[in-house]
Image (cartoon, rainbow, N blue to C red; front, side, top):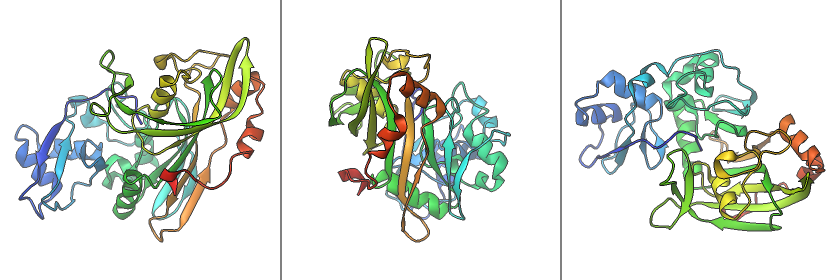
Length: 328
């Protein structure tokens, strides 16, 4: 999920292009774009098929629809190494799991062409330049903290992207929401760009947006001043832009600090109170089930404390298995 506004896209039908390299196929159909520039777009993840980013040397099967997001000239210099710190939770030959701090943009985009997590990955692990988005499989909004996975090989990228697409990758989030949330629930609402604002998303009718489902349950309740708040756990069955933020707003419980979606600023929290807490997936090397956790960061712990919520005790009540239908 990212904070970048929508970009006009080009769709290319790959019928008859069986065996052709992705970069050669696309550049032949976009005569105004040089191959060097197109390869930078691929490196930025701006060339996709079925929501999956593809390496330049991918051989087409001749049945794909290739989606290209043209990038401005500023993007030409974005795919470079910069000494941005990265917090490595786990690393092996196939993948890395990182814990992203709030305030760090994951991927270069309009307004943030440098100083991103991707630039940091290219500095600390230069070999990742061979992969689209330096191996970044999924994103978090700039002001969301927590776990994300990075592939280190093309085969790992394909495996992890497939798990993301088929919804078998388990992701749990912790959030502090405004008001008294129900004990539990499932929000099933398609998401699309808000017609009134290019930087905001909205729940729309199924025919207008992309399907999205969020499961949530309340772990604890408290209050900051006269304002009641709820510590909730959310689990994703899809990964749309701003999904949890949009879904919680749609039921009248925007996240604390999320001013874009009407969330109140409480106890000095000026970012959405959202943390990617746990990540579960099948390891690309042997398909074994692996899981990582990242403790709630200090700013959100302080926010919970201000609300009279024991964040550690609340987290300990959550059962270990990822047990909703999208995370089996």
